[in-house]
Length: 129
Image (cartoon, rainbow, N blue to C red):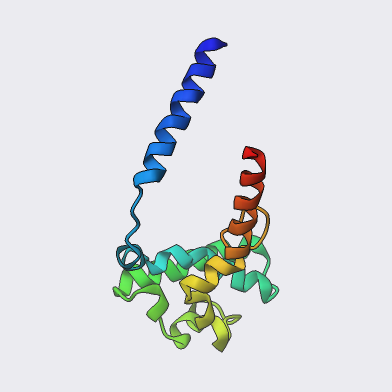
């Protein structure tokens, strides 16, 4: 048991050092975004349109496949190309290829939206007090 306490204490010290020296590079982070990261957003879009989830994974996979086959980034596939994959795509599908919107849509507890992250920080700070 004492070994576990020491390990946790050491881990906290290491994490503190990492966070104290952490430097983010937002430009590089944004450049690393890949349209394939939004494949789940395509599936979510279809679910909101009433398509059963069990089908959306397959449809989203076909979008990824077409993107790879044509060498066209997924967010640059035309509406006609997407409609050719599944007739239930509508013209508003382009909204699903917005990285910031994708982050903000995950607002459940533990989600990635700004409000969720701020809430998580508040809870964790409360635990430290």
